[in-house]
Image (cartoon, rainbow over all chains, first blue to last red; front, side, top):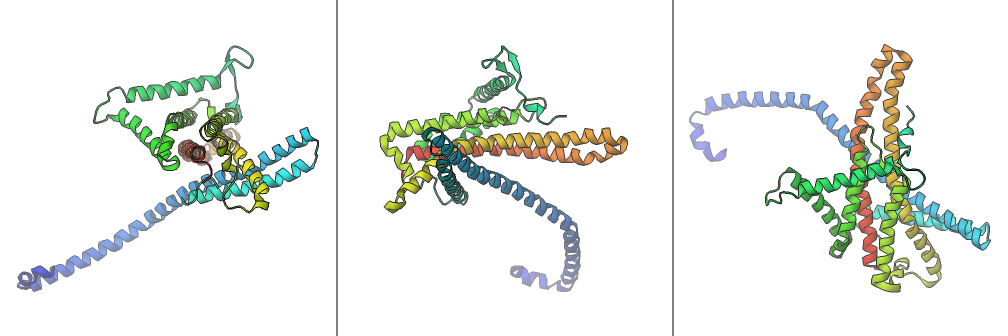
Length: 122
Length: 244
């Protein structure tokens, strides 16, 4: 704008009047746009929060299944050990606890993975 | 109206454990659809791909980049397996979205079978390639000696839980999604039957929910196929590089 200053100064009054008019119209338009946009903005936000909710649910299901699977495997191992070695109930108690620990390990791993930092193997 | 009815296995040909069931039929359909899709896609083999060729190339690129990112370049030797798994799970999930179709992946024995393919590949390849060194995946580095037995036991349980979590996740997502869809769709008819015309008007609400859930289920079908593939790649990378 400032580069073309000397030329526009000649008809400065006219331009400034026109410019003021333009400014006014622009600000009016801006306000109208803002007004019109507000519901749309909320809509977009709710949509993105829904997508985030879906992602969160997928993550929760994944972490939950990791944990539950480890506990189940621990319990099953302990039960079979008890069946074959006759150590009831110690095998199940010990392996259930190991299963809980493994579940926490699984969750730690997959959530570290989620951030894109860790690796699978320890 | 029974939301579980859709998962019933019916024998179509033959009797007993070796009969050809509706589940088998949809597995065959899935495989035929995949082969057909890729054959049509690769028919022209032009430098500038058409629609079908783009789709086929897109699915290749997608799986290939997943394998490269999570299992490294050596992981590409497992690409045929991973690609087959991805396409099978994806197509089976999407087939389940058709009305009156049977969802193959909503049965845990199917997903467990797929998970066992992955885990046996890892174990066999790991032992063939690394011998007993493969057992190092159970021994993390930098653990003091007195803790070692405990940590190794935990690692073994964690390893054994992989096929369970891999299969349960896919199966539970598909089962839960389809039951939810059916229940909400059932509300529409149920309201109509219970309240007459007013119920029909009220039924718009569950109908809208059903429409939204259908879209969500398509999303879940894809995401679960992707998660299955991604975890397969991560487990395979363990077989390639045991004990970091």
